[in-house]
Length: 271
Image 1 (cartoon, rainbow, N blue to C red):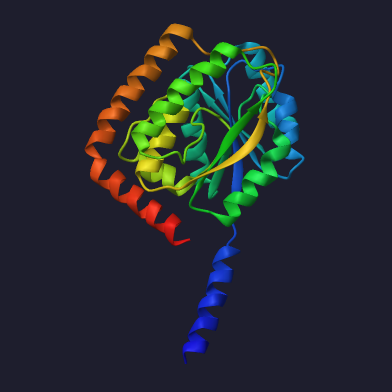
Image 2 (tube, rainbow, N blue to C red):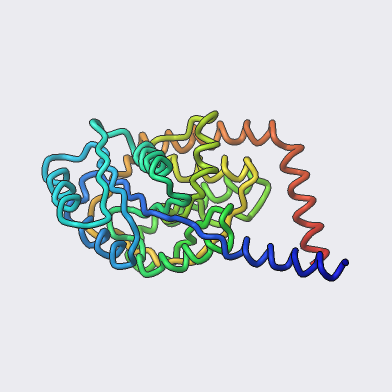
């Protein structure tokens, strides 16, 4: 009897391991008319549906996005009437993906800095771990601005403090796969930063909600069309404010984070 149960359980585990996911790609776009077509083509060659979210782009970029939506199969264009920020654009795309029945959304930037050849690796990890966030761990080349590279470590330190964990290696990389159900559950009760504070904010809060984070190394080049929308003073203020809010949120979650930390250490010791 025990043998029969073990065989059935094993078979169930195998079928769960092979469960299908239905992914799409969400690309927030704001005035990247020179780079976006190459990014879209690289996505489509992998037979993935693509949701372009026009975050209030100027005429030239909006026209380019209209052309792509008409000329390319598997491309859906969602247009925001005013520029609302990268985070707002990504969340709008994820909400549309949820309505269309997709299970996972792969977020990638529109400026060509991310290596689209790594998309299959990200999706393979999502297939093996459908409830986890598959997060890009950047491998930079010589094109990365040194100031931005070193400044990222301040955010890394705060993220490690606010999660009591090193599980999130880099919270600022905009190349990742989200389980859509987890995101929809989170945003139903929690407001997420809408601009350059988005990537870190949502990742920490998903971790707090119990999500596991798997980091995938990926090459990053700055940037495809020379356009950066990082606003030095305003975005740094928003990021600093986010870290303060997350810190106090962490204090309220100390018992939960401590329990999770102890379990992780115990599991590692057992293995």
